[in-house]
Amino acid sequence: MTRFIGCIDLHNGEVKQIVGGTLTSKEEDTPKTNFVSQHPSSYYAKLYKNHDVQGCHVIKLGPNNDDAAREALQESPLFLQVGGGINDTNCLEWLQWASKVIVTSWLFTKEGSFQLNRLKTMAKLCGKDRIVVDLSCRKTQDGRWIVAMNKWQTLTDLELNAETFRELKEYTNEFLIHAADVEGLCGGIDEQLVSKLYEWTKNYDDLKIVYAGGAKSIDDLRLVDELSHGKVDLTFGSSLDIFGGNLVKFEDCCKWNGVQN
Image 1 (tube, rainbow, N blue to C red):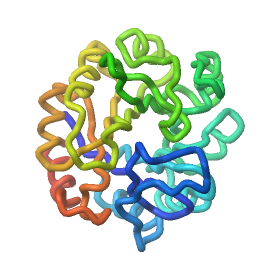
Image 2: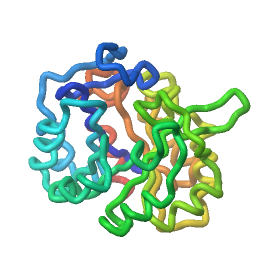
Image 3: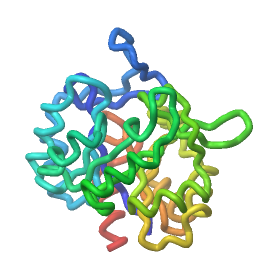
Image 4: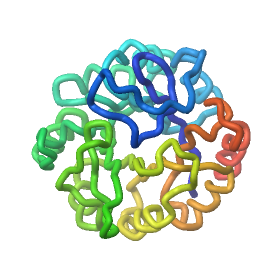
């Protein structure tokens, strides 16, 4: 069954909710921000832990976030996943406190060419059960979903499809997929993408898929559950009351998870 998954997005050391499509690789550029928390990252780590929201992730969006990420992870050791700048030289350090590491841009060259050998290296270092592969994507005009890196600004040569999941599942058992074009807009999920995620992975019972982007109602949990036949989990961000939203209550998400147990 589809479950609610929590997130802690960090930008310049603060917990924020950002419109994903406005992030750039330039430090001087200011992304469009929906919410800046008055609470430290550890507050959210404790909140998720106390409500047993399994599989939550801390994402470092750019520099100056390591301290805040460690603070969250150390508040709830081996409970949260961490992503942002993860590579073969630092993954084991982060796994001291994180349940899993989320790897994205390091799997590609600067030009966006996917390097399978890097994922194989990571799997050997960490074990496939402690790696999440981030396949966050943008939709092209011809209706394909292409993995995007560098804060979702660079389209890579890796397309989301059945073949990609079939190949990569040998080295990980979990994928995180932000629909970058709708991330932070609270305008609704990408229903077609959620349906495709089920279609592409329905034969892999042990594979976990987490979708993020556009969720705006507690009913979206039911919608994702229906579209994915319970295969895909859902993250709420800007719409959630703990992040300043007025569309979805954290309490209701926890109640949903309780029913699914």
